[in-house]
Length: 171
Image (cartoon, rainbow, N blue to C red; front, side):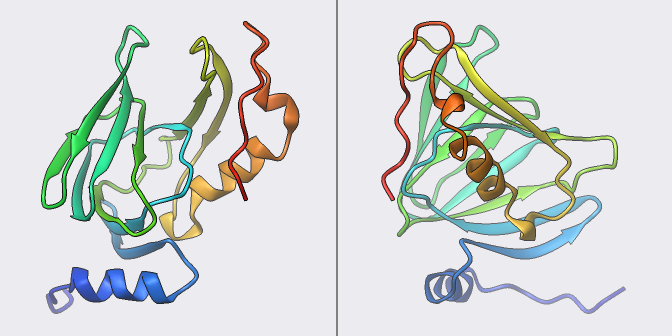
């Protein structure tokens, strides 16, 4: 067993602010994964985790968009200093500003588990695109990778159901 050591969330958020990465992995173990993430200017996908996830707002507020089993989109407000539990399999989209930070606690993925990233039409709610990935290392920033994939093809933005051209984020 390694020596136990506390982690400073304040130092972690300062390091993220000063660096190029928007995520800092605190630890990754088979039964426990913890990281701090900075908000994004534009978050549009819904992430489906194979594990439960607990999110604690270190700084700022988050609007956690999620989809019910009936495909209804709802929003839970998570204020600074609050935490929320998101059950495994719940499509969710954490939206918070780049000057805000969240601590995420979950379990590392087993070899048989995949994460899912879904985009929906902003007008009619129909599915636009789905990426399924095995996420073995959160340090690789899988969310940014699927964003590049989604926004890298204009065909992904047009809804096959209603024809709406979904906007791409401003650069």
